[in-house]
Length: 369
Length: 258
Image 1 (cartoon, rainbow over the protein chains, first blue to last red):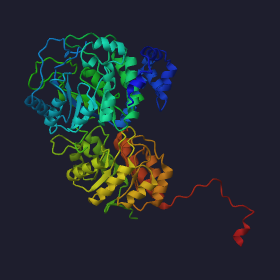
Image 2 (image 1 turned 90 degrees about the horizontal axis):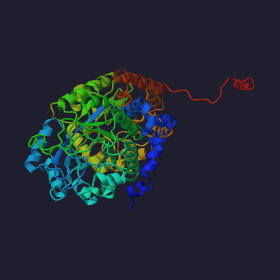
Image 3 (image 1 turned 45 degrees about the vertical axis):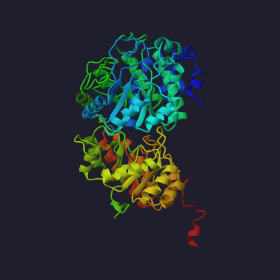
Image 4 (image 1 turned 180 degrees about the vertical axis):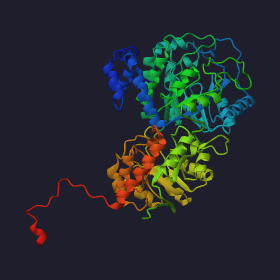
């Protein structure tokens, strides 16, 4: 069975990084002005040489986004199911070795959270959990989907990687979108950041999008945790991954998120910080390389920065997010996965989107599908 | 001259149809629709929220009193499109339906096999079906045979603003069609719309080019005029192209006397 691993193994991290760093201003300008961009063009857009052309890239990104998506911003909100986790991740508040009170939502709590989120106007919810297969496994997710199915129009999930048949099972209960982040494509550093737990299996995680694609899930989100390693190479491998998946699973719609490492309990500082300018370069590079994919922005970024990014290439945003299980209604003090930066209330974010001339879209999916 | 377009028993004076998916706000969309003079606008079921108090697409369109053309955008199979159509008929209270089935999320290319299958079924269910389809003359005839009220071949990929890249095939479709031909997708400039009308299309559908303009209201007006000019040119009988001048020659003048 073919998988991304075969493609990935043809690349060396060091050689890839080196070739990105060797790109020249001429390579960058060609990549900006060419109508169809190759993987080499994508490298140029991510290169240090491109940093002086970020403004030009952002303008092109804006133009392509308007053409494809118009002046609309989709809205979604995360709903944390559990902070139970059997993994040790050096950067995450839910890490197994963090001493914190663990919490998994009961049916009643889940429904209370769902109703509260719906009352904020949301029709699209993203279910999130740590990786604890004994307590928060496929059966738990199946039950959760049954419970909240009638409440929302669109359900996404960002949980531990599952097997193909498990994705199929969850799809039959209304799962439409699966997000899975590789965190970093640097095989050795991945091991350092994930020393224990099922997540330490780099290859199983790397092949998760293949399993999602084979299961026929409609939408899939990829990304890396910006700051864990050199973002230029990590973003290139994300693009390479999407490039492969688009050809292999051509009916699936793809999205990319770009979470920056944020403070959390027991977390580490970014190894390689990503500046705001770098961040705009990343968004623009993804947009120029893949004009049709969805680009999502979380509340990890500051309100001022998020407001500016509305124009530059993103297509969906979360607002009013809590990153702890029960955070909306039942356990507001439980430990959050990471600190959010945009703490504005939903109506304020909506107002910010509208004042920029964009329409906030609550619903872009119907159960008929 | 009464130059009405009849689709599904309904008469339209305007031959410009509008899509509603990409406007920055409902007031901007409303202004563009009014300025376009359009009498038929599309709306995606996947975006519609009926019964909510907040300002939404459906209530805005209802206020404008334009004809609604619900679409099945998002459907990947005939089965999904039919489900969507049944729900759309309830929500929008119309039999009109823009049938869209595109399993490919990148270029949104219509699936001819699933579209034909769904069209046949939907016609039997009493829908007035307007299928979005590739500029393929054969599939357009097959759709007409199963009873669609019009065909909507693409000029270019959706949202691409590339104009009539499929022109040669559109001309064949227009020549052969017994149902109205609405050129959908790819129209990026008023001149593209005028050209579509000049070659004999019955109507055009535009969204991105208007919603994405700096001034959508004014751009809608520009498209209105272009469609009218193109139609007027078509029904006036455009002179044919010539590869060289046809000056009268002294060597052939005697033929006039024969």
